[in-house]
Image (cartoon, rainbow, N blue to C red):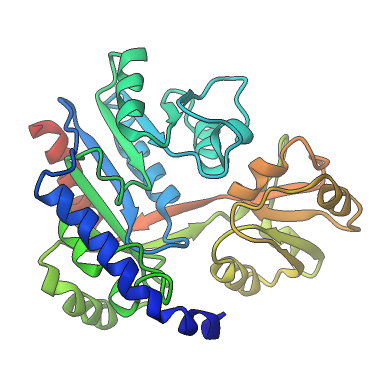
Length: 335
């Protein structure tokens, strides 16, 4: 894969020019960015791949939902529908995409919608519920048709954007100067044993951008959940299980299970994988039960025997969370 990307290097300057021109057109107002009369928070990254956008969106929902009427708009990656879709009790992951559907199942009092056209999506959300106070845009850092009031930029601790290159040689969706649109930088997926000295070294590398920098880590649950029950991870020590993943980077999950002494056979698929009927049949025929991620679970839910299918929830923990939350709340209150 690295060799292929090296051969694609001649295309990188072309991609750089196209993304630079697009951003310049927005910066100079030759292309229109629509502003709204209510607070909009955009969550995204500069790179492709998993930086923890969904757990971060859930964190912001948890922060705001008891004081504000919150709505979330996603594009609905790999959904089978088109246009604007507002989540309801009949929705499935095929209607919304796996991550929006996952969040919808968790937060019943929050409006969730998907639309690749973000301007239309925000307008229709507000039209259908005029009581909405705040809209969160999931994975929207490059969606410049909407001008958000607050931008949260995520970059993975072990894959910082400053060490990356533009597509197709690297994983950056746009040039590093795009970070200038951010209001805060979150260094996500920080290992929990990371010293303050190491964090300070990372801050030093990012201080050129003059943005507040926070660190976050992924916290794994100590329990697994199925449709109707839960079990502790400790109860599985010494027992062999199957780990089924279809996410961008399964290494942190595997590291966690290894630390917990869980013995597993891994079946790995690409990110957002759409399980075929034959693959579901193969999973049904496995001789022990299945551990999977929450995102993968919603794509297997109702298709694999619920007595054998368990997911491991995750949450985001932000270091110095009080200061981070103050920035979000201050923006909303003063909007």
